[in-house]
Length: 142
Image (cartoon, rainbow, N blue to C red; front, side, top):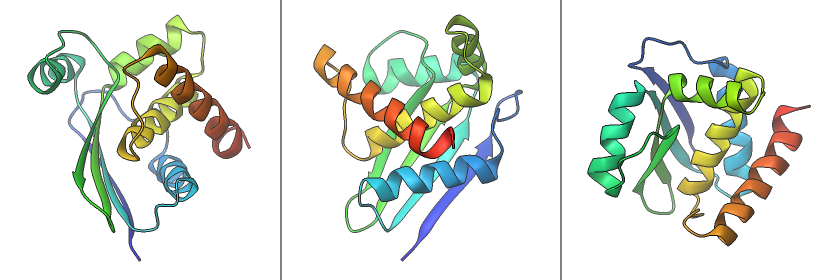
């Protein structure tokens, strides 16, 4: 059984949550979805690079805080989470959320995508928000 979570920072801004705490959060969420074997890379990039990736891979020209890519199939869930600390900081300010908590929410959101959840429709977005809120309460706010 392997539970690997690695962090890479290609951004000028540090991760707003310690790697130890972020790793623990990701592991708890993956386990909550029944994932025992996984490898997740969290890569911080600038918001312009993430915008270009959103255009290239999703045909959407917009700023975002995270993009998830599932790389492997069961039994090992493998994926990459590309996030923008700059965009997360802007979102935290806009929503009056502490920066570290907003980063935790974004990581949870990315992991939900790796576990098969989408947010393309209003109903799916609502379900995703409920999961984020629940996992934040269970695993972050404690």
